[in-house]
Length: 417
Image (cartoon, rainbow, N blue to C red; front, side, top):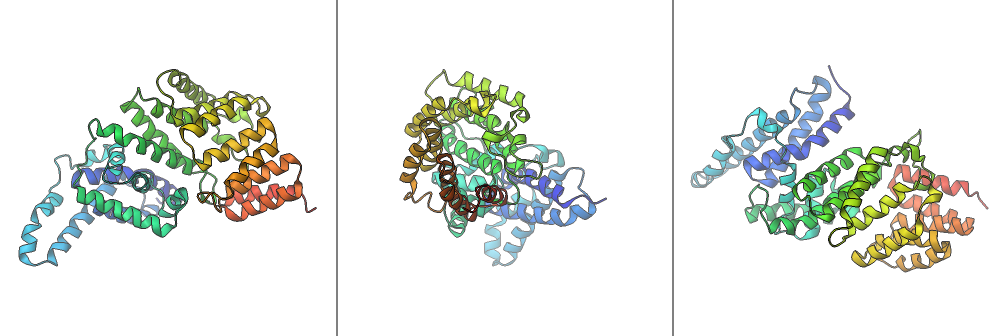
């Protein structure tokens, strides 16, 4: 009996990084394994909707991808001269007879965290580590990653391709790194998980506001890192930030999938259990050791979570936290968020004055959030005409359909005069 194509897509998206991890652990050829996994995913997307999902989907994908690797290796050898084939026999034997755990049950082993560490190999630059992990572990498309980093898609495609080749040349082993290398990789790992979560919580493009598969995976991986480093305040801070933010998911959209801003959300729909868990993490983390950017962002999310109504939000405390965050991790997006907090404490004109400093920032050039924030502050200031134009401009720039509809609706609400 067939199943819905969307159900297959969700299943494949969840399985892809785990299957890739299994293949890389067995065969140790990152770029070839990713190509083989993509072929297996394509085969599944064609066969499963009509023929049904196999009893062990991950094992099926591992088997099909493994066969692709073996077939490709044999094909490569057949095109070489005899002496080249002899020289290449060792890796081919490894493909034909992989590690002893090559049985259907071994496919259930989750190597995602080890794959995450491999993608953050020290031979790669931090931006490249993040891009490769988003592609291989997070399942984002090259276009989505390019938008996250504000670079052209072609540039990001080249960066990811070079990253896979660099890992291959480095001869890296598929295993969890030992200290102190583990600590060195952790910072980039957290950045990657943060980006995966953000893309999932507010999709940069498409017809849906959020991608629950990405937020779930980001939280799952962050929990795994937290288990590995339970005393690291920034790991706990990132996990708390994700949990507290995800707790608002049910209230972020209306009956027709429309975006509902934070100030208008029905807070009774927030996940109370998740909020308690997130607040407990924040309380356990902040008093101990040096405070980092993720802990500060978690504290900001905690202030929002503790307010029973939007009117009860402690905006002076949030502004103070953004002041601290601006020192710990200064960047245009932090400034943009601080603009809103400043406006809520000192009025919209104060926010607009600070926002003007971002107009020439190359990282935010053309970003719809700048226009959206400006529109919101102009509306607060009573300048309806300018606010309407800013909302319209923001709607034209975003590639997210729910955001386009929301921004267009805000503009329409302000009338035509």
